[in-house]
Length: 264
Image (cartoon, rainbow, N blue to C red; front, top):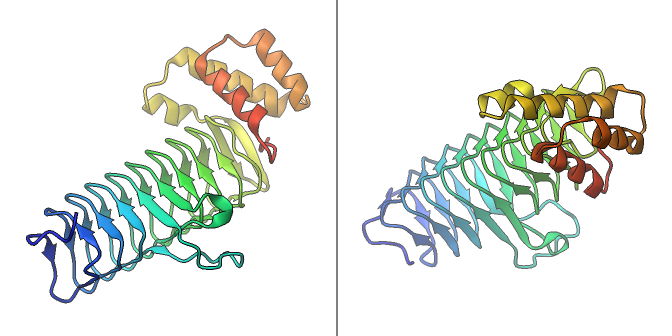
């Protein structure tokens, strides 16, 4: 897909002839679009954006001014190897967001799914993987190799250590410093140290989760965090006492597969 002759490209924009711009895409004033950048249908770059390739951007995305996408990693091990950035559909990327491409040490790709909101000054480092329906608050910083699973919500001014995972439907309060994996469905906040305060029940109710599943998750997370048991003992209690459901199974599998340990 070359630059479509009817694509809406502002005369002040600089677009490399090797870029690929869909017919209904819009490139606003003073944007710079490099070679091997592909922009899908109805995606809009409002103004003053800088994009380097190889970068693939899907359909119906909205990029607010002053963001950079696909630029080289800050990782000192990065030596200029060819690496990519891939962004899905219907994302909203607010002002001053920075998204870095991948590195050889992390699979050579930074990947953002669909239907996400990245608020102002969010930083997405090399080899990060963000799922769908994720909200990253103002000034959230994601270090390299971080994984954010679907429907997670990270509140403003929080930082996530490299290689950490944030599980599905987790909610992280503002000003949190995340150094271990955050359990799916959990409500976690930094007061005064990062701790789990139960299930993310309000968020799960809003998303239509079954009441019984929420109660099972609440009980399981309390056993993990408030029963003065080690993790193995808590899991035994959960398997023996908590009504089985897919969400609890997912929680236990997340804990089993964690390489950094989980926040409790």
